[in-house]
Image 1 (cartoon, rainbow, N blue to C red):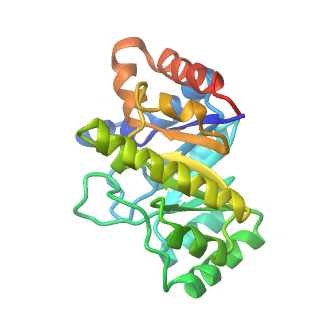
Image 2 (spheres, rainbow, N blue to C red):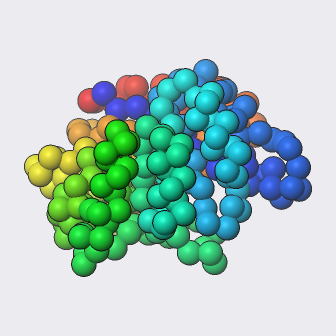
Length: 241
């Protein structure tokens, strides 16, 4: 049965806008869990634009479900992952000038390096995931690297301006899920999913987790975080496993 994992980066973004103490992403994580989240996601960026090292340490101590750490494949983040030991590490592309992650990692040609990068992480008992586009070549590269999971980037689907374009992207994602399942990879989805565009995936088997942040935090401004998470979790619970 698919589950919801909630990204609390945007809470930290609001806090960092004033360089203050509130709102607190750690408190947001607790409320998300109370609302039905099965995991909490944070992206510790090189420039620390939102989540800070202290947030990650506190979340590791207080999250009652699973803590997922999104990070670039750098030496600094490798050391932080081994020190923090989250439930899952998800390697993502990262550019300083981007507002948010713009696409999936390009794994092709990096299989040997990324396999070596993840070796110590796997040895520490941390599950690994790779954030990639729904491209067969990238999916097979993820398998060669030895990751247990992939997270398929759904941003192109979410940003599609026409129904035709949106359906084309949906087909690509569904095909990618099938390929991943056939070669033994577990599949998560994330980026740009909201209360409306997540619904077509109800008829798509094989998805383990939905990674959703921005749309939940936007709705929470109006209805409160616990209710916003509960509403999304209820939607996903009705999906066919």
